Image 1 (cartoon, each protein chain N blue to C red):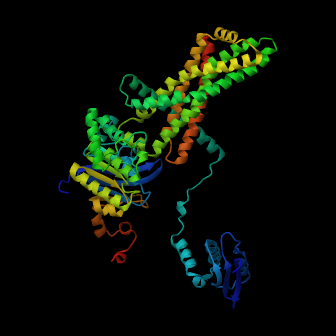
Image 2 (cartoon, each protein chain N blue to C red):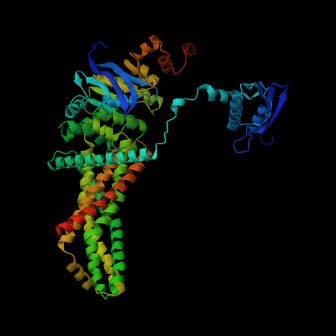
Length: 376
Length: 256
């Protein structure tokens, strides 16, 4: 027994005998080929290597790797290796591993592209993906027009399911987040306003901020993370499973059958969610005002009513509908163009959320600028 | 086969993913009533060839003719019309996972016919009973076994009584008995529906049991190296690559 060890002896000037001893196991320390190399360097007259494995008690692949090391050294020095002294199992493994020569062309050529080449290809990829988005939007619009004229094919039961998922089931998380956002706005605002003794105007601040911008933005971001990601994962899995191919060969356009009901459901439900988020935000603000600064609840509500115009409300709801379209589009686009592996589905979901949130922020900026130009 | 009228002709087809050529110079004809096998080692482009034939991937070069209908040169609308006569069984079944088996089989019927709900229901239960799945109408694909999913996929492929049936690796992932039963089912369907069947497979048992014609794709030379009845290929073709494939790598002496 004992640890793995190797001992070299010379017979005459031409034959090197490698004595293998002990337990050769992966987890234990096994000798390296370096000592053998030293011997070979010191005695250039060696013509043959033989093995003696009498004292070898057990072995695994680590021994095979060691022996391959020796064979490689021997090959470089044109020395003959005689495997007869080795256990038959080792010999078989070595023959098996060398039976099929290494395929040189099998390795994927991983050419490290230069910095400029990579920047360039990223840029063209970006341009291409922007183009894809536009094409996809166009196709979605086309499908929508077909739905309006009653020619689109999708299942009403799917639409109901998506309405429920994007509507009622999103209410708890939307409540929580928008309530807290209203609360935070009130906290920050009332601190500043109290310096002027104008605490009551916190109602204006919270009301306008929630109704005009924050309600829609927060709901949009929640839905991008919740529903957009779900859409991408659903369609991505269908892509992996060849389900989308099966639709295409039956001439059922995935755009109508899969994308349209999702888009319609989210776009219909978003304004309702935004309206509800507005209410929760105002309540959150009221809690701070009433609870910490003793502002009368009726005064708070009256100030809120006076501060918010109908315009503000409609702009918020309109933004909500726009965000619904954007989130659904980015989710479905990433799902449809998903690759055919489990990690591709994950990438699709991630990318759907990122695309959705970026689209929401850009759209907010555009709508805000437009509103200020139009003076609404 | 007595009536030798060509059903599908592939003419000088080159398949490529971007710049990477998968197969080139493919020329073969599938006759009506054939059970045509597309065979070759793993990863040689069998399924890609199938995707070209069912309209999922346009060829880099060459043509696919259904009768004298030039599939890829035609308008997409005409192509869709053509696909009405084609049924496809995908490798994994590809049942729509959010729909029950009955809804899966019904969708092609709703898509292409104006049958009443009652008629569709009858069709669905007939097709499911043909593949020995009667009574499973309201099951979802995730609730049944892999072999059953495959048969359900076959029921969906047969929904419109197609003239041409495509099978992508029908016996992959099935136990030998189920695979044999699926082979028998394919033969019976061919005879009763008078259909032409195209099968992508590398299962030798299936190839010899059902194949009446075939094409052999070779990944090394990136083209087809043989075509014809697989049993004849085994007996008469002396190309070592084909012999190795058809004999599972065993030489003639090994088998004797």
